Amino acid sequence: MTSTLIIGESMVELTHHTDDLLRKSFAGDTHSAAVYLKRLAGDSEDVSLLSAVGLDGLSNELIEALNKEGVSTHTVLQHPTRTIGLYMVHTDSQGERSFQYWRSQSAARATMALLEQQPALLADLAPTRVFFSGITLAIFDSTARAQLRELLEQLKMRGTQVIFDPNYRPALWQNKEETKAEYQWAFAVSDVVLPGLDDLNKLYGTSSMQSAVALVKTLCSGEAIIKNGEHGVTYLNADTQFSVEVAPVAKPVDTTAAGDSFNAALMAARSKGLPPQQAIEFAASVAAIVIQHKGAIIPRTELQHAINQLNT
Ligand code: ADP
Image (cartoon, rainbow, N blue to C red; front, side, top):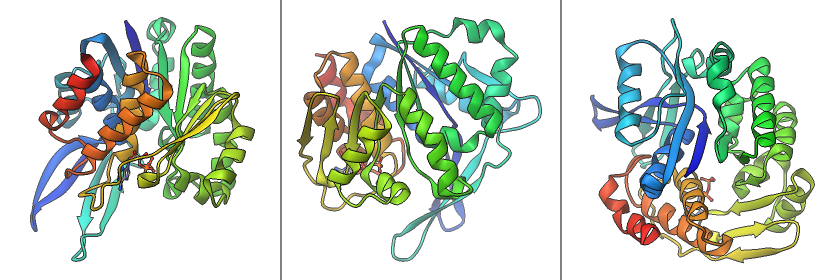
């Protein structure tokens, strides 16, 4: 059975139900990727999250929420004093969304230190593939980043495929130089990279898909799938390059988790043996559904058609 280990942070998400009533759910880029991957892949794939939470009730609720989705939590470690991060979504009168975070001391930032204290768990890790993102890197300090790098290199030697989405969030980094230095090794260690064109443009100053492709070729030697919203997707590896068109959604309701659900669907499709082009088409169709609903995690029923399509 394929097994995927996803490394990153799950947080509490608070959205306004009414002006003064908030709705609580759980989210985060890797959280969303884990949930969507498990929903789409079903029993044929073991999906686990490597992260950390606290010992408090809210942290336990998060573990329960992951378990309810079928995401394995045996690698969700529990920090003795910290708790999970939190963010609130504000929507202004024009419908523009902004986010406010309380995550600077989150338990997830201590994931690698907690993992080091569990040598048996660490030695047992041998997933088919491992997925991490630029946000995973950003929330770690330099010691944790070095530990993550070592873990990825070890897993690679055990035959694990390494997948990376740069998911660039400037606010989480000191400056671009710091980000580029970390991304340098993250791209190099990865067998598959899933960047968004916007992120590459913002961080590296590229200005077109063509210049982004040239840049990505210098950063990694495996497969790259470059997402560009409704303008399509570009695939490249050492031997080939092609574009895949995306059916545009004219008025997305909420683009949160577009890239995360795309990544999850792509992984699920590749596990089922779909070749890159069909896997990308499937991933784009799933992302298109996700952006037509509010929230990072949309109701499972809305994905049923995609789940059936993949599993028949
Ligand atoms: P990221 O969120 O990683 O920056 P994108 O914004 O490119 O990535 O979105 C990820 C995927 O979601 C795209 O590759 C595309 O398949 C889909 N997507 C995003 N916006 C649209 C849209 N307006 N219409 C159709 N598909 C979209």
